[in-house]
Amino acid sequence: MQDIKIVGTASYHPSSVVTNQQLSLLMDTSDEWIKTRTGIKQRYISHGENTSDLAVEVGRRLLKATGISVSDIDLIIVATMSPDAYTPSTAAIVQGKLGATQAAAFDVSAACTGFIYALTTAEMMLKSSSYKNAMVIGAEVLSKLIDWHDRSTAVLFGDGAGGVLLKKVETTEPLILAHCLNTYGNLANKIIAGGTNVDPTFPRKVTTLTPFEMQGRDVYRFATHEVPRSIITATSKAKISLGDIDHFLLHQANERIIKQIAKKLQLPLTKFPLNIMKYGNTAAASEPILLAECIANGLVKQGDLIALSGFGGGLSTGTIILRY
Image (cartoon, rainbow, N blue to C red; front, side):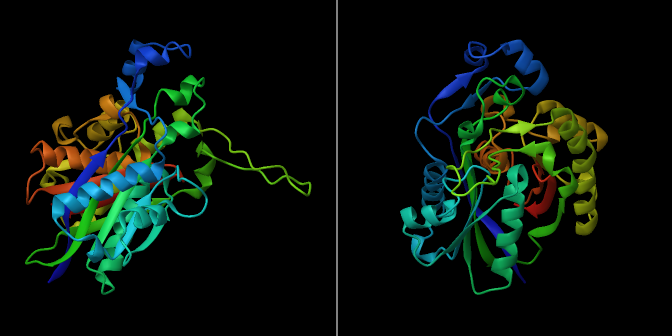
């Protein structure tokens, strides 16, 4: 049978580290306050690199890691909520800078669930077309959307990118077992970033974007209820049990959220690797950065069953069950 296999992973982050102590000089907060409530100790912040720059570096690393020629890339999807511009898409910029002239390229906007939506889209396009190789990248420069004096949001986020290279292969067992995507548009106002209002006058003023705003308690309640439901639904579709899954790679939004999800699923926290202490919340880049790290350090091995799960703006959830 034919299925879709992850043949390469990569991640990249800016070089500049911003610690909790540094943030305490900008706002009324402290290292202890941030660590206790989020698990975050530091984050990487871009000094001039835009979202496409981070994504391009991930693309280059994917090509180098897999040995696949850039001319053989058929599809590039970038998941982001912090694109370089409304148009062109970040994926189009990546395609141009990589020289992937044969690749169709577009962005997916589903905030912190974006990578799961993009991965599912790429899988379906590879299975239903002549495409053979796809690059799926989650990339964010969230620092350009943040009010750096707002303690409720500024302490949470960081910049970074991660991605996978997917290949259509012949296999004796399914590699992507199931997915579950859900959107809760009635809760859309719980997370807003970069919003614009239509000026009633004409000619209108130059567009300005609103900084990131989040109703934290509502988002926490949403995540701890809906993510377990998403994971359970996906495992049911895959006809496996929760215990069959080796690793649960969840969006790194908040350590307390992940611990609560593990508790609700009645699973050991050791199955839920964490790197939020190092990166903060990198939205759509979160899951692929974590996946790349887990493979690089030997935690995730060939044949392991993985649940990748994202949650966030939309509001939305997404889970995909795959065999690495």
